[in-house]
Length: 342
Image 1 (cartoon, helix red, strand yellow):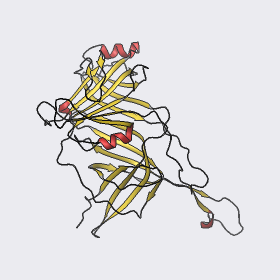
Image 2 (image 1 turned 180 degrees about the horizontal axis):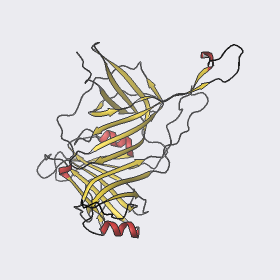
Image 3 (image 1 turned 90 degrees about the vertical axis):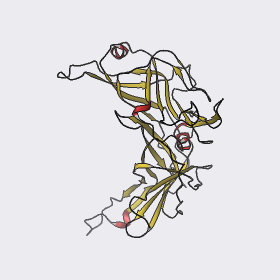
Image 4 (image 1 turned 120 degrees about the vertical axis):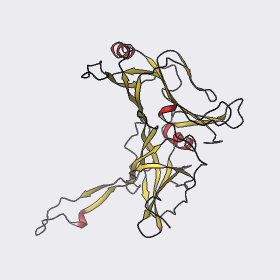
């Protein structure tokens, strides 16, 4: 039996852009908008006696798929998704542990991000059936991480795909053993100071801890091109979208309890930002599930503080991450997990 709650989303990295794979990783998602992404042409030629657009003059000229997926970030079972977002990934056993693995994700420096097959299962009302809608050749165009006050860490991903298929067999979902979510209670933030960048086995360390930030967000656009629609491809991309200049930026809200953020905006200071999220239950001994976003070089473009009618004054602070030509990547994502592989 099925209910309207039995929707699913699964995915798997593809070996070849043109060859779908069978999803074997599944997400506990909160929302999605995966759909066709098509362009139609309506002929404009005149014909006596015809006052409406004619069906024989309507043509499909561009075919594809696209959409978003939103989810709460879990403490395990998500490394394969992060690899699709960044393009470069590793998984290494943490020294002195017996079952803690560190996954390190950095920006790809080749033309094409990994492509994936993404399949959503949509239950039919009253039919005890689930229909599969499958994106073939899906590439991540952009993604965002967001932590609101007294909330959990949330991830939104956006995708562009070669095609949406409706005849692919439905892959039965399977999920990791019970896991926790990264929440506000396990969050820490450093802005400025001197940091030591993460490695395949060590988290980033150092930096100046801040305790006056209410919320935090980060987003990255992979700068995918809009080409690849070539003659012979039946209106579909014949190759994956190529990466361009990545745009990494974000926003935070800080209570005005000091002048550090004000001065950073005024002086356009080069700062490092590290956001660390720690899970509530240890994997083993002193090792806890951890997700860490590391930006070696940011600059703030936010506002100067303004009076707030007697309420606590805050600053809304936009920032942009840059390549400082020293760090190997302008963005690092690190995850410590009990997953033995991506």
